[in-house]
Amino acid sequence: MSEAERVHRAWDRIEAWMRDHAPTALAGLRPPAEASQVAEIERELGLTLPPGLVASLARHDGVASGGGQLAFPGGDRPMSAAEILKDARMARDLWDDGSEDGEQILDGDYWHRQYLMVAAQANVPDGLALDCRPGASFGEVGDHFKGEGTRFGHHGSYAELLTGLADALESGQPAGWPLKYVAVPFDGEMSWESAPKPPTEPVSLFEEAARARTPAPVEPVGGELAPVAEDGWAGEYRSFCLTFVHGVSTGELLHGYGALDGAFTGRTRTEAFEDRGRWTNCFLPIVRAGYAGEWAFGIEEGHQEGLRDEVLRRLSRGTRAVALRHRGATQLSYYEDGRLVTGFDTSRDHLMPGEADPHDIFPGLPGPRRVPAPPLGRPPLGRPLGALIMGLQSAENVRPDLRQVCDAVAAALGIDLAPDALGGALPSARILPLLAPIPGSSGPVGYGMGDRVDGADPGRLRTALIAQAALAAAETGLDRFPEVADALTEARTDPAPAPVADDSPLGIRLRTVVAEARGTHRAQSTDHGRERFRHQDFQDWQDREAVGTALRALRELPALKAAPHVVGRRKDPYWRTRFVADLEGG
Image (cartoon, rainbow, N blue to C red; front, side, top):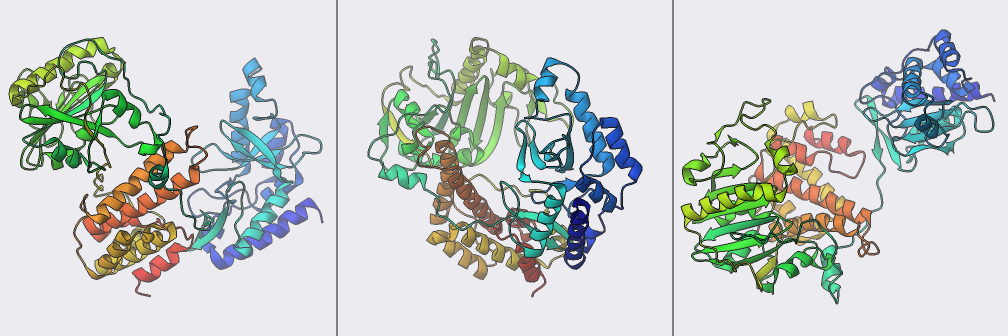
């Protein structure tokens, strides 16, 4: 059978499958290309097209653009003759200029004058390349990745590529290289979804750390220990976050941060800095605490937990809290009884929503009085490039502003921090970061579900979302934690469950899952953690984190606003069918 005959037979099979499963996508196949268009490619580029591509273009001149159309596994969409020629011209103009650099690129490893891009991704310059060089490799199809180059050896011809596509569609089996995908028809369209993998239990950074007999070596995690010789708050720190809370103990302060340990360890500045860089401490933030008269303080390097809105709201309940962060620019946030009063930043001259003018509360702050934030889309008044400028200035240039901010806060609030208050071993704790707030809107639902979700009965929508969240929790293994299983049961029976409290069993579990994802990502990229933690472990914890966010959204948001956080979290590529059935009451 000739190459052209194999191509047409493959297209017969592909079209038959699309007729039964994806008729809308079938309509997106373009009519045959003109023979003159194919001849123009050969004439202008000075090459001979393999017969498989010529036969395919004579059947369909590529595929119409847009989602839901036919593509090869992984999403590479067959290109038209015009698109192939346009891409070849761009490659020629970019690389084939006779320069030494161009010749190095066109050496056959990254690209070649006689390669053609014949299928492309929608939004990235990656795709499938066809080898048109005379010789044994003539007609092979390979993968081209920007920045990496072109790799052959997976498809001996365009006919083989199309036959593989037909096989994958008819069998429903995973296809593609190196990642595997399955073809999913839905609503007359089709998409390639990641093939589900057998469930595995990810390695727990926290469990491994608990089993470790000795502290791990310190891994660099950013920040600076180099001292700055000057008086004043945090004078020896080049960058820091310093938070004060009025009328509380150091234990209460550390608990407000989200301290993981009940017994607080004495740590020096160096010990705290090093401990946050050990996988045996799960790369958690370390906060040291002490007193400045009636105020308790927490000091951090390399993190800024004390400046987070959720932390300051918690620390300031029934009292007052003020946080200062210095790293190039100096930032200030002041809260009373759980609400924001004002904020200040040496890199901006405008007020953020909800802020009073900080100069009214802290006379003596540097810079002009603040003005309201400009309308959305317009640059702020004053110094629109302030943040960039402050980031580029040296520490010596920005320290005067830091000192002025510290003096203004000290004078207004009566904070008297002794010169040696930050020295020596201070009570300290590892911090299990508090849960970040869930955005009220995370954009459209997508996945072809927008109209169905928008038009659904709210009660039925909530039931369908809970079912999706429960299945996602089972697929990721998150439901093995009893707190999560109990929360799913509660969601099914209580139409308005309470938001997740940070210190509740569920809150602590979800905070731990987030910390597992962050810490495992850090650990698997280090020399000392490489033999223990894989990238797959990070992905598994990240998936659990996403499902945890979905559970919180179902408790804290109306069903319509929770939907973007829930829909699409499943591992099953055919989840849409079950979800639609639940929405329709099937």
